[in-house]
Amino acid sequence: MSATGGTAAVEARDLRRTFKTKQGSVLRPTRTTVEAVKGVSFEIAPGELFGLLGPNGAGKTTTIKMLITLLIPTSGSATVLGHDVVTDVREVRRRIGYVFGGDRGLYERLSGLDNLRYFSELYGVAPRDQKARIGSLLELVGLTGREGERVEGYSRGMRQRLHIARGLLHDPDVLFLDEPSIGIDPVGARELRATIAGLREQGKTVLLTTHYMFEADELCDRIAVIRAGEIVAEGTPAELKRLVTSGRVLEVETYGVAGEVVDSVRDVAGVRTVAVEDRGPLQVLVVGSEPDTEVTQSVLARMGDTRVGRVSHRDPSLEDAYVELVTGAGA
Amino acid sequence: MSRLRQLWVCYRLQLKVMMFSPFEGFLQVFFPLMFATAALLVYRVNNDPDAMLFAGIGAAAMGIFTSQTTTAATLVQRERRAGTLELVLAAPTPFAFVVLPSTFAMATLGLYSVVAVILWDWWLFDLPLQVENWPGFVLSILMATFTIALFGFLLSVTVVRYRTAWALGSALEYPGWLLCGFVVPLSFLPGWALPLSWALAPTWGVAAMRASAAGESPWFDLAVCLGVGLAYAVLAAWLGVRLIDSARRNATLALT
Ligand SMILES: Nc1ncnc2c1ncn2[C@@H]1O[C@H](COP(=O)(O)OP(=O)(O)OP(=O)(O)O)[C@@H](O)[C@H]1O
Ligand SMILES: [Mg+2]
Image (cartoon, rainbow over all chains, first blue to last red; front, side, top):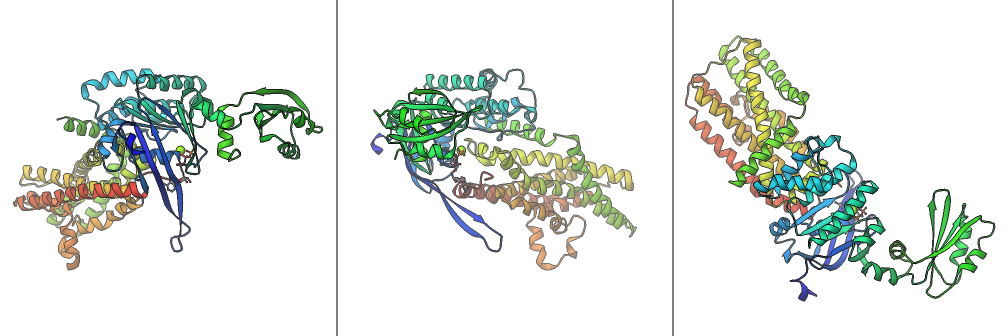
């Protein structure tokens, strides 16, 4: 495993992290230990765009924080560009960029431009390059013209864009993007995807977390799915899709479907997963089946007096694969 | 060279953050003025000009101390709340060089309150500063400000690790007034408290201010003041590395 350690851009070996938290009153505290990350290993090749997907609380942010030197692993080790994240902190910090989602992490009382100037200093951007660098990043994230305003007046999406510019200031080789598209409007999100794809074209290594499956599908070369602190699957988006529901997905549109009906569909021979999605006034029954089985007739036979609309088939999406992986249905 | 530029840019930007609203600037001088007024009203009863000068100078230094200890302690807490603490720590710049400019920005505001208090005393109490040795006096004010800033620096560093340590900073405000001898001579304090006073740099700073005003030599007090201040800096730098490591181990950088 460590034989390849020299060539990987990011390498995590059996990373673990526990948190001790106190609850209750000062006088009678109860200590609990949360195992947030339980032995995560992966490698990201230079220039690769690697996705880390998983439900809330799965341990994605904790894993990233260990890689960017903000948290010391409870056990295990990791390197970024060959530098150990515990012992070689300065070298790691010089080469990485970190962007997280949400609207925190900025100086509200300073203008966008001053925020970027401040972080340029802290990230050691050469003084003579700063102006041009900041200008081109403002252009990249579409904030040109608004940089003089105080951040407290920025919208959520504007803050998120400023964050992205901040993370790129020192032109890092490895980028950690923790839900960078949160709160950005559809047009902006599309631009952001183009920006991220552009980073890969420049040869940057990117670790991305997101809750938007189409985003991961479109961008990532490889994906690891993490559930309750453990990686449950890893591969290209295509491989993940194949890994689970090999059969096609049946979608039945209904105008309200009863719980008993859903349960009885689950019992149909050949059915692997059943999920109900709300789409406007419709409730869509999404049925994943075993490979090479035809369940349409049997499923429709169980619908009883449910009002059924359009019935269709499609190939499994990354989202189907993801839902199956994180709910443990396929395992 | 580039380090100096970095400190200077960060200092200016932090000053901008702190001088954000005129209202806060007003509070910055308002409280010290009220404390100075109260002290002088008490002292005026005795009708002793020497005592008035003693209290006037002490009250001026008190302004810096108050603004520093309370804001220094909340400084890091504020960064934590804003989510910027993790970002500045993840930067390649050592944390000490991040906190120092902020501390000096606060010291600048402290200086501003000293001047305000001196002018106020003059105007309200007709208490002109009778200073024999002006260069010594100005130097003493600067030294007091500088070392109080270093004290604030030490406080800030502990807050990185201990999320509730900012409360300690606020709690130090009032005992500090007594221990530093701002308005009450140190000779009034019980003997066991004196070592505490001596360990506080402002004690020596304010003593140097008084010595200069009285035309005595301030140099001994200034030297001790500087020594104690530098000891704070060394202690903060030493503790800083350890406390930040401990914060990374115990996950206290973020709010959650
Ligand atoms: N500082 C902390 N102290 C205590 N527990 C923590 C701390 N940080 C994270 N945790 C816990 O660790 C677990 C993993 O959290 P983490 O933030 O890594 O999840 P995530 O995968 O990023 O989730 P999300 O999709 O919601 O961002 C959660 O149970 C969380 O409560
Ligand atoms: Mg997260």
